[in-house]
Amino acid sequence: MTHNHMMRILQFASMQEPEIMARLIRLTGRGPATVVLDLEDGLWDVTDETDTSALKAAGRANLITLGRTHPELFARQPIGVRMNRSSGPDAALDLDALAEVSRFVEFECVVPTKVETGAEVEHVSGSLRSRRVAFRSLVPIVETRRGLANVDGILEAARHLGIEWLAYGHFDFALDSNWWPFPEPSEPRYWERIEPLIRRWESAGMGYVHPPYFQTHDEAGLASIIGRLRQASTREFGIITVGPRQTRMADRLSNGRRVTDDVRAPMPPVSVGPPNEAPADLARHIVQTFLATRRHPGGFALDTRTGEFISPHVYLAADAYLRRVGSD
Image (cartoon, rainbow, N blue to C red):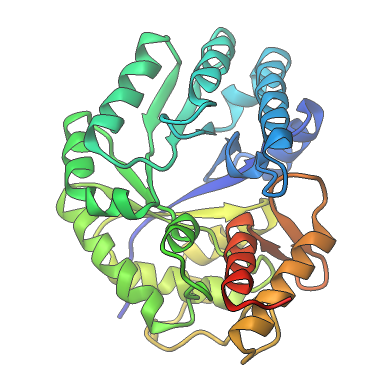
């Protein structure tokens, strides 16, 4: 029997031109999702760090313009923002942008990335408040080996600050761990790591937020993930979605439709390449598809044939694997 827990949806969206973002936010509608405008991985050109800096600068400028010209969207729809890691070169610039936008709007949440210590959580929270950034909640993401090693301190600091949600970043953690291929939700080893994290989060009074599932057209796979999270959780949990279509799908599934009581049954095999590929063959497929299907210089690639997003983390891990094994 499944547990009947509520589910929070965070729909991540790469920050683009203001009118494009306004249309996307309106398309999402007034449903249960918080639209999180992404200043981090969605504006990351893995092939050119100089271009990454330009993309992030443009993203901050677009965010300021969106808040100034469309404040009604923020009043009507919960909207958050994902900022770059506090120890990186973009953190101070992100804070400047968030402070400027706060002249016009209030954010539903701010999502700090690659949080690695409790002191870092306290620093980010203090920096936001000292800059008078207007936000309702903080949702840190733990997504590195160092962060997971220090998670008890992070949870303690978060609880002290009244933070209610903590996210796990599967793709960054897998990249930081030099894994290839990345564990998939259809594999037991994926859940062998995640289910203990859910228990640790909840024992500290935190709600767990699950990383995105990039097979955006696979409703059966998403249903299995939500069912597994419902079974593993004892309180409300969250999930990150990619785009309005997957958000609507997740909303339907969160209400129990298409989610069976047999949540321990394995998901049908899905992967970014043909099934049962050797690691080197899969890596070559990823590298070639990523470079061929990116819609713009930074961020994620979209395989229009499958509706699957390929993250820069997966591309980098595949490329690193091919370099290690000496493959062309």
